Length: 228
Image (cartoon, rainbow, N blue to C red; front, side, top):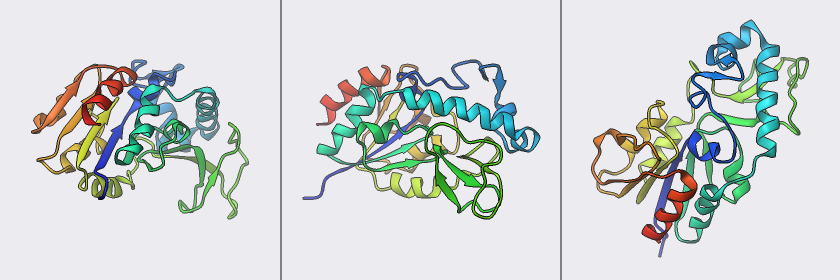
């Protein structure tokens, strides 16, 4: 018998418990930088060295972070379900916790890509990506991250996956960042949907939505008991 498909959308809240900060948590500033300074195509055109340094520091912190209990439980649920994680996060904590199917909507902190050919993507070893680091075609490499104002190319893949869910789970996201927030509406209306987040987002007033108003590590322990 085929396993039920558990589709999971995760956001910054689950990584925050591993010590990774977000723009939203810090009032729109991250170590003194606004989104417009370091996370837009315009910022890259204006000051690529600043953008590269900003992401180098994020990478350095992310390498030291360890998966928390929320990440671990999602990996453990593969013993009971066919689990696909759709994450808004750019860290690799899901993979390090043992999850085998992870779709990164917003790219990966640990990848670079060519500025003239977006199909040329490279793994970053260590934490540094510097001015002068070039692709095989001779152009400067940039972080392989979807910046504000750029198209989320993986959203169509994620929407197709969401539509196959037998259970849909949201963990650690306020459901206000689009297009990711719309994925819960792509899941079949009749299936159970669970939202684990201390702030209880409205979840678009959809049917069959159950809230667990806890942070990810605590809420996932409760959810595991409910669905397994």
